[in-house]
Amino acid sequence: MRALVTGGGGFIGSHLCDFLLAKGWTVVCMDNFITGSERNIAHLSSNPSFQLIRHDVSTFIDLESSVDCILHFASPASPADFQRLPIQILKVGALGTHNTLGLAKAKKAKYLLASTSEVYGDPEVHPQPESYWGHVNPIGIRGVYDEAKRFAEAMTMAYHRIHAVETRIVRIFNTYGPRMRPDDGRIIPNLATQALTGQPLTVYGDGSQTRSFCHVSDLVEGIYRLMESNQNQPVNLGNPKEITVLELAQKIKEISGSKSEIVFHPLPADDPKRRCPDLTRARTLLHWEPRVPVEEGLRETLDYFRKVVQAGNVSSGLAGASR
Image 1 (cartoon, rainbow, N blue to C red):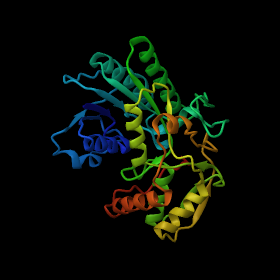
Image 2 (cartoon, rainbow, N blue to C red; image 1 turned 90 degrees about the vertical axis):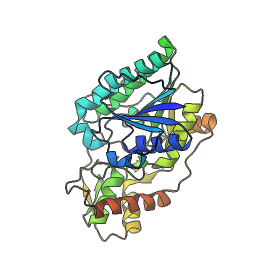
Image 3 (tube, helix red, strand yellow; image 1 turned 45 degrees about the vertical axis):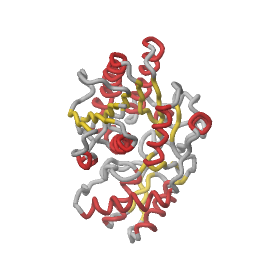
Image 4 (tube, rainbow, N blue to C red; image 1 turned 120 degrees about the vertical axis):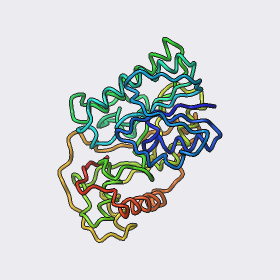
């Protein structure tokens, strides 16, 4: 089997490349490294089953070789990117999805779209089932990412219905683990780097808002199972065990041994109060649910960020969010 992974130099994309190669697949990684990092895939450079193509998927894709499956993971995805790269996010969600779907049609390849729990916005239904249509502010700061992914889902289903492309849609909830960007504004990289560099741990609002965190190894297993299934409707993948933002900060402080104080800042605009997946569809159709305990995953993630900090690859001004 031969797969094209767009955004393969990113956090989740690089782990997906590793996973598929371990399964015996040939992997073509396509990335323009606007937010991804060559460090994430450097260990694959000598693997004869791995190929890197530097390309922006928002422009036409010309892939001469055959491909059995396209996994579209290209997109800036962190809160810091929403303000820094809004047009690029919209373009990769619209043009990038269109180009990769067109390639899937031409190559008669299976297609998997990496969507997101952000399609639910600040949800009024809890936990969020795939049948929930969401509560999204289309013109807010987060709207560029929310609406780009909602459009990408609509485009994917249109190609499935009109062109009979075999499609899959995964709605990814909060995911964490090694290779996250230390400065991307998500809560775990923020708190981890703050704890390890002696900065105050930043909690937004009063810290009572909840999140649920899935380790990246569990996520890629679920993605693979979805790709191998016959399910063309969206499927949530994430961890249903909620934790408050304040509890998370306290856990990271304890595990890291940090002496940093916890400080409170105003809640960002349109920041969701609760975010938790309904996993009924994943459990029933994929026989999947997360296995890595949060404490175990946090220890591994903190070990990774400790190396990043020691290497001096952390910026001093960390953008904040509760995501």
